[in-house]
Each structure stands twice: as structure tokens, then as C-alpha cells.
Image 1 (tube, one colour):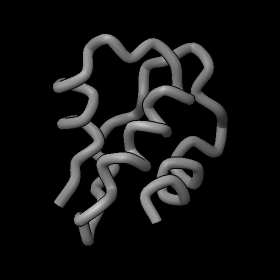
Image 2 (tube, helix red, strand yellow):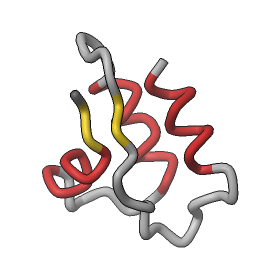
Image 3 (tube, helix red, strand yellow):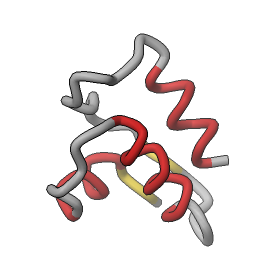
Length: 58
């Protein structure tokens, strides 16, 4: 299972939501489940951030 918090902790260099989304897409390979357990703290995080991260995962 891939946790959003784990990705963010392991990659403190991330500065934008788009960087996070790209990393979620990359890390999704080989994973079956994705848990969104925190809200991204980036200033450009959109209103529909959960939907966008889910789409990047699938």
C-alpha cells in the first residue's frame, strides 16, 4: 500500500502539487492501493486535489 504521507516524508524537496502528482504517478507502478492520509501543504494545491491524486495513481 502506498501512503501519501510516506511519499511526502521521503521527498522533502517537493515544492509544488504538480511535483507531488508526478511522483505519485511514478510510485504507483506495482502498487495496488493508495491511501490519502494527509492534505498536501503546497500553496498550489487545488480544490479537487484528492481526485487528481487518485487519477495519477490509476
